[in-house]
Length: 126
Image 1: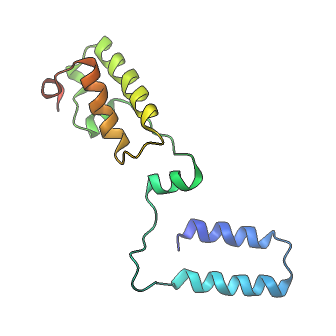
Image 2 (image 1 turned 30 degrees about the horizontal axis):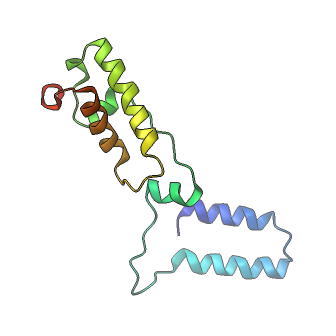
């Protein structure tokens, strides 16, 4: 079980209104879950989007020059206006894709922004 989630459950249990006997049973079950490895199932910890889907909200993503470089774009090949246009459009595209079935929102929204602005991707690649 995810350690952070386990601690969250233990903290909630500590502040619950259960009797001491009920808390002992719950603690024993949490201990069991900490080492439980199901057989025949492909179980893994959810990724960023899995947690977002489960909670109906997603973590913050920060788009900056480093993020562009991480996705293969050289920000130095853009003038100030192009950079501002791309960053604005990228943010808009990513926002529009939230809640969709798209798995790779960040790179796909960058591709959409580049295409929408009519930039030649090869000319701005790192």
